Length: 144
Image (tube, rainbow, N blue to C red):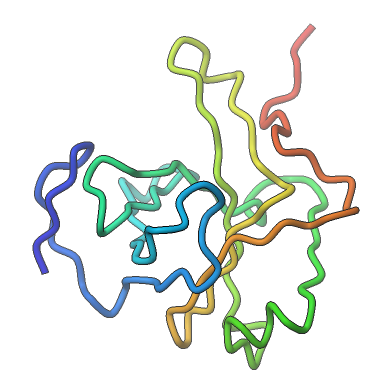
């Protein structure tokens, strides 16, 4: 399908790669359909583009590709809502905030990851209450 976006212009999207957010992104409850876009193979960042809103795209990253501990324990109700039957079907990504004037100030939302079931294309944002994770974890260590 053709998708017109503000950030990327018109793009071809394989409909089988569209995720249905059965657990909506906080603050964007009315948007249910998103696709993960990869701007290039040389970057850690991808984009989560809203299908229903051409102006909305979140920069996201798989924390597994970074060098620090980050584990999540999914409650049974989330596993059921997303139809997860195996750990191999789970993809976890986190929304990032990249300041235009200072990319080294990039932060990662570790408290509320995006969880994708790649087998059935269901997804959702979950809040890891009581985890101690931060909503704005610095991606880069401060250089002194």
